[in-house]
Amino acid sequence: MPAATNKADLLAVFDKDLAKLRKTLDGVDEAKASLSTPDDDTTIKGVIAHRTHWMGMFHGWYEDGAAGRAVHVPAKGCKWNQLKEYNAPLYAKGNETPWAELLSDFEAACDKLRRFIAAQEDDTLYTSGAHAWTGKWTLGRFTEASGPSHFRSANTYIRKAMRNAK
Image 1: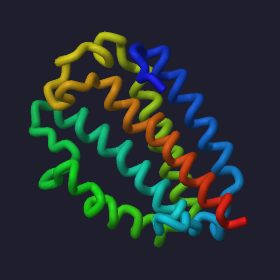
Image 2 (image 1 turned 60 degrees about the vertical axis):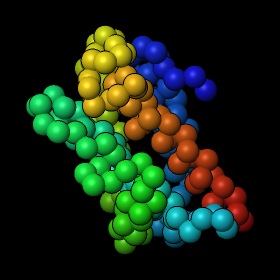
Image 3 (image 1 turned 60 degrees about the horizontal axis):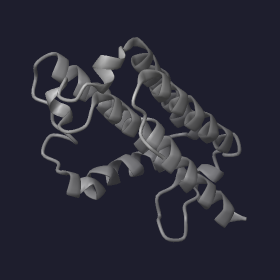
């Protein structure tokens, strides 16, 4: 799927992919939220905790950049090739959190990210180099990676975990 190149397309893909994920999540209760796939011990709870955290990270990056502070992408002291170690405590914390709380936090993060997108102009989202911390990517591409792309991968993983439980 090609990346969005304007705000209208970004909002459309955000809404479409979130709706698909929400439909899948409708079939998940507290017990099912602890399911994982045979080839990965990450639970559904962990996946939702992870996605929520990374939407929050996006806002932190943006706010730090806008304030002229150093932006640590992906995180201070963490390189992209260290994400497995970085994400492990996120999954573990998710496993210990009640499902209703995880869903509430996830929905709040989704709402915040969607409001952020809606408040931006196309040139803010899709002008290369407008935000030094985004490197070769545009702000819109970072937003898509933090939201819709994560929604798609979460939906795929959760559906697989649910299928394997049957």
